[in-house]
Length: 152
Image (cartoon, rainbow, N blue to C red; front, side, top):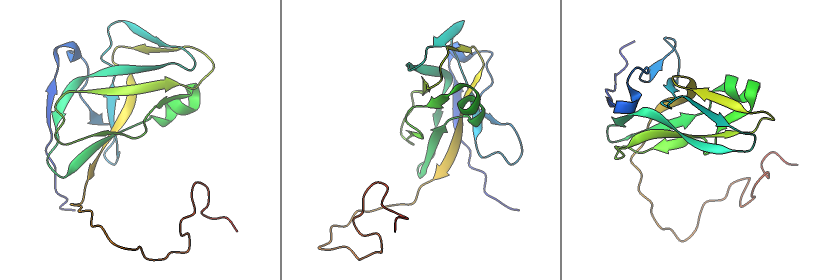
């Protein structure tokens, strides 16, 4: 298919030496695995959250974002998820990519150097302009808030 390849500059940080940079586990994977660039072991106790370093920084092109998402296996088996799902990396950010993990499980979770902790999806963003208007068009839902859609 002649899909366009978007090149993203990625810089391995000194504490990321020896850890795989983000890559796709299969040809059709939507998310690239992110690994933990921790020293030794980090323990995440039930209910606890921690910022886990990735060992890399990147330069996204204008018009793109990176979304940091949980890994389904960690969520199902251990109750581990990304706290601000999805976390957004903006195109103008040049610092280390960090992953905020939280343990919703009932036992300690051990994170070792190089463990796959999250996945990163690159998404194109449309150019958007907010325009102030006097009124909005009507919809079936209207101003119904949280949990209002699909109710009869």
